[in-house]
Each structure stands twice: as C-alpha cells, then as structure tokens.
Length: 312
Image 1: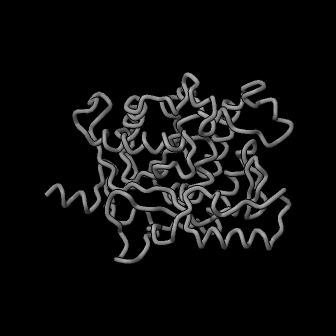
Image 2 (image 1 turned 30 degrees about the vertical axis):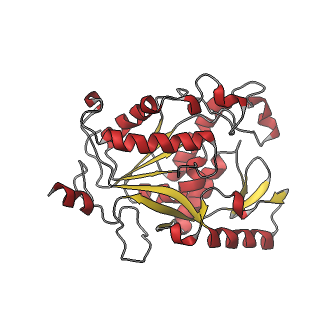
Image 3 (image 1 turned 90 degrees about the horizontal axis):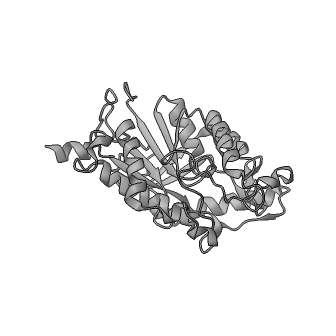
C-alpha cells in the first residue's frame, strides 16, 4: 500500500459485530477525518446465535451457513462506518469461530482457539507491515469477557505487534514496523451503571435488562486513560453499523440487545486503556484522541515522541 495517510489505526477483533459494539464511533470518527482505519477480523462468527426467526436456518446446528451471511453483514457495517479497509485474518474462513469457553467447538479442527500463535500472528504481521499503523486497538488479556476467540485475538494482536518490529522475523512480509501506541477496550463502571439506569428509566421493549457486570471490559474508572467521543454524527453511524449485524444485534434507540434479549446501553463515547506507548495527554488527564503524541508525516513511518527519543 502506497501513499498512506498520516494517521493509521489498526483494530483486531474476534468476530463480525465486535468492532461495531466496541469501537464503531471511534472507527467512524477517524475514517471521517481521513485516517486509514484497518479492521482485521479473526473469524466469520460461525457459532453465533441467530436473533431473527426467519434466519434461524443459518445456525451452525442447521445449515451452518451463518459465517458467509455475517461476512455480508460486516461489509454493510463497514459501509455505515465509512471504513474501506477490512480483512479477515489469513483470509475469510481461515479460522473458525470457537464458540463459548468450554464448548466442544473449542477443539474443532480449524477453530481459532486452537490456532498456532506465531502462525496466526504472522498473518497479522503482514498487515501491520503493509499499513504501518501508529495505533493498535484490541482486547485485554481476558478478551473483555473470557470468550476464547477474544482471548486469542488479544494474544495474536500483541504477539504480532512484537514480531512486526523484529527485522529477523519473516523479512519477506515487509519492512519491520513498530506500533507506537497500543490500547485495550475498556468500559468505566460509573458510565456503564449510568447507562443501565437510563435504560431502566426508558423502559425499552427488550425481554429483560442486562447487568453492568456482564459488560465486557468493565473496569474501575482509574484504569481508563482515553475517551473518544463520536458525537451525534458518529454515534449514529455506530448505531447503523450495529443494526447491520441483524443476526446478532437488536437496536432500539440508544440501547441494544444480543441474542439473550437483555437490553444494554449503546455508548457513543468509547473508552480505552493505553498499555504500550506514551500518553499524549497532560499528567492526570485522559486522552481524547488515540493519535495524541503521534507525529504526522507523509504516511510512511510516523513515529511517536517516545520512538523518536529511543532512536536518538
């Protein structure tokens, strides 16, 4: 890829729909501002439960045709977000959804949970060296809520970040590149609890209301180091992207539910923890821009201030 934009963001997610729920507003905002936003999805989400009764035949225990259908849903979601660079890790269908932790699908041949770490990371290294992102977003080491594919996506993303910078690792994949800043998805407890209070007061028509403790990545407020607001425009894009994942998500105004039918708040501001690199915010303050502290350049290897110091 030539003539790269000055700002480049890479996101690594486990299944279609994870990107819209976790980072839809962030992705739409940066894409709208001209940054290169690259999404790598590790599986097609073949083991997901299906919400619309008319599509129940797609389920893995029936036609097992959900994966290709979700590929189309993801394409529609990316159109809603204005994101034009999306890839599946190793190609669509290379790794299969592993199901929930402890399910028999965990041990199915081709399941992402069983993937060789360095082999899977190698596919991502090729992407990193091509698009040369300054910022990477993925899950924490528990995958946000313990799903095996989310945990594996975290492992692959972090391993690939290390290997991509190593000039001795598979030089045929391109010139080495060091990612300046790595963030994990987070949700601050007070924000989550306030969102559920709004949901209960609004009384949406979902069968039930979820619990704050079930929200992936919920943490104490002090853990959160960055908050990216999508505002009305990009918040609406996020909601549209989530609606595109119709087999997995039901959206009702500023709330949504997954296949369990339990309502959750839909957040137009998204939260992160910086785990590698230097914050671009003043001491004691949160960043409001994931690229804070990243130097603009012509798009061919911008470095953070931290990287510049190490190069001296």
